[in-house]
Amino acid sequence: MPKPNADLKRAAKATTRTARVRLSQIVADHEQEFCHRLGDALAPESLTPLAENLVSEGQQVPLTVYDSGRTDRGQKVYVLIGGFRRFHAIRKAIHEHLDAANIRDEMEVDVTEVVRGPSQSEEDFHRDLLVRSVGENEQRKNFTTEEKLAIVKQFEDGKVPAPRAASALAISQTQYDRFRAVVSVPWLHAYVAGNCLGMTDAAELIAAAKKHNWVEEFREDFDQWVAEKREFVEQERQELAKVGKKLSGPAEHVKKFADRKLVQHWAKLIEQRQRFGGRPQFQFGIAIDKEKKTIIVPGRTFRSGELSAADMETMIAELQDAVTELIPLYRERQVIEEARNLSDEDRQRELTRILENRRRQKEAEARANAGRPAGNFGKPAAPNVKSVETDDEAPADDSDAEGV
Image (cartoon, rainbow, N blue to C red):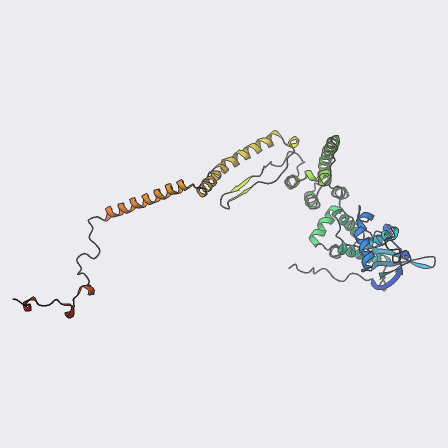
């Protein structure tokens, strides 16, 4: 069970109160940086299930807002800081007339209003709003890595303490520190957000680069590597387009080339303050463990155009080594399978052989024991009570017989 964070303590000074306001009084001001959803997260098609649920069940969770201090046609204007998916799902239901009788612009909705605490500064109140907007949205639908990077950047710019920021994102302090290490380097942040390198790998490499004062060299080498891989991806895209296909998913991102072995190779070069060059030691990967009786054949895809002649030689050699080890295992298995599939004639033949071996063994034992005295030689034999005759069973005296 993880230990509680001893550095975490009450930080929020703002308070809350419940209220009901008209939907038209709420503005989703994305410029206030309280909406942390990127891409298609708020697209109408992605909100269909939530909109349908609001129609059938009604609003179940309040929206979170704060009073902007402005008015519009005599009514207060509230800024949305939590519940962007719910808010846009309601707007979708209105636009598509899913339930015109109950869901409309002038309908009242439940809200939780965040109120500035006593003597709380504007800067500190904004910090409370930012942290609350992150925590509430993360609980409803997890943020993507790209979204988390943007949020951590906001936290760092807003000077939100790391323990509080990590708690809002529902991640550990260690994980938060990795994100912070990446967003502290804008060019690396851009590469991770652009799917050129994994978040954990980026944090590991930049930490090593900073430790060994090798950041600029790392950037130059990585810039060149990304440029080469982007060109390769573009070539793949063009080749597929010729046959009416296209790249999709992970296949269209440079990150697919940065496997763990390559990242470890880069980390080692950075530690040695060497420029990127060469290749990590190539390994095909078949592993045979005779003690555990396991054979591991990793599922890996190699692009022949990226393998050097030396790589192919290594592959051939490793395959040959594997064959050398596999042949004895194959023969053992073959014998076992043949033994399980004996014909009736083979079974009879094997039984005859076993019985003949047993007969010969007994004959050998008999010859070895020939001429040796028995174990009870020279000892009087034990009486056999069955051989002793009683008086009643004695034969009659023939001298009394008639005619003598």
